[in-house]
Image 1 (cartoon, protein in one colour):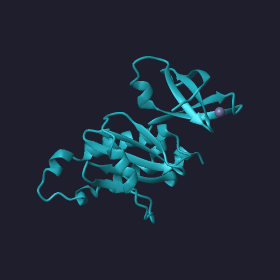
Image 2 (tube, protein in one colour):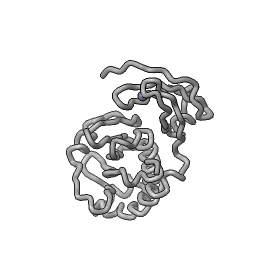
Image 3 (tube, protein in one colour):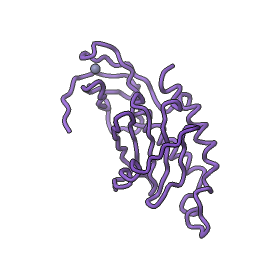
Length: 197
Ligand SMILES: [Zn+2]
């Protein structure tokens, strides 16, 4: 079964925090791992509204600071970052739809337990992720691997683009290809690119 049809199996955690503490955290049943160190690194990043990625060996992180909150997901390295971004975008949208976070946090007796009801929402998102229409799968040819690979892109990335085609770099197996995606989610060319960093 493709990863995105079964994304829950590949997730380590989803965390929603402010500067001080965690407001909500989802983990798979029977997971007792803690991710405080990863979350401390995430909090050091002051930039808003841009997704950041981090490779952690056997886990990858995607995170974004949005409306004063930090959204972080940890997943198995097999899950493409675009899937994780799409997931976090939807989680942040639903969280703000459900809660007036600023008002809730201003209560004198605020505790994170006030967000416990979000567990059901997030489990629904994870279970139905493939049917939410958040991502498109595009097949691209890599002439280094000499094979056709599935490339996932967020629909929002294409739909909110300033111009077309939209370039996306797909790093895999130690090399990268640059793919150009048009507004109909077709790729308009694939090039091998050099990488540094
Ligand atoms: Zn390749």
